[in-house]
Image 1: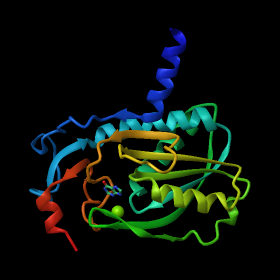
Image 2 (image 1 turned 60 degrees about the vertical axis):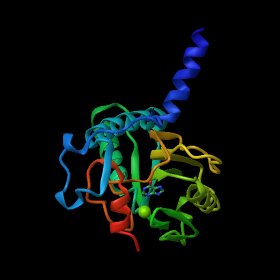
Image 3 (image 1 turned 120 degrees about the vertical axis):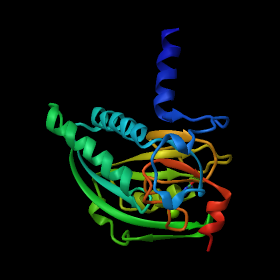
Image 4 (image 1 turned 180 degrees about the horizontal axis):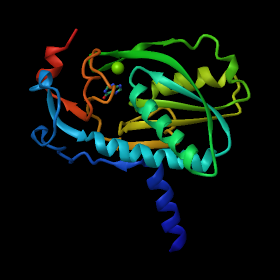
Length: 227
Ligand code: HPA
Ligand code: MG
């Protein structure tokens, strides 16, 4: 019985906080958000404060696993910038207050594959031409969202070619999609339904990065910012 409990705990930790398909989200009226997006959103799916609390715990898990290592944080722009900044802040805070510390270097790469709400085949990786400084290093890839997993798979292959000592992946959001291709991140904030979400640096055609909460975009929001 105890064994089952341990396994369940591990599984839960791996999935992160699971948000079910039937979860209607919070009404936008319950939160503050920029007036320029009124009518463009259906609901708040993860409020900003909850993101911060979950990120604090992920930093603790990372510290428990990697404490006293040197790591290179590979921030996947643009969608990962806010999560990466907050996660690095939390790890820094823990490094100041606990016996264990993690020395971090932070590097940025940029991926682009989405047009409107669809993943396109041509994935562009910018700033990743020469990652030879990753050879023999412990790498923590930080992603805002993992959708189909194709982006993650391409990026992992690219990074693995430089033969780092270890690669861990932190993803704030993982979508529940069928036929997931790549591995699930080692550190997951939330597992969410397969809906298009924006906010906390996640965009729809570059809009909505200036929104604190993670929200579901409305049909009229998609139409308004379609290209
Ligand atoms: N929102 C923003 N960017 C994304 C998403 C999403 O739901 N899925 C994959 N990239
Ligand atoms: Mg995007």
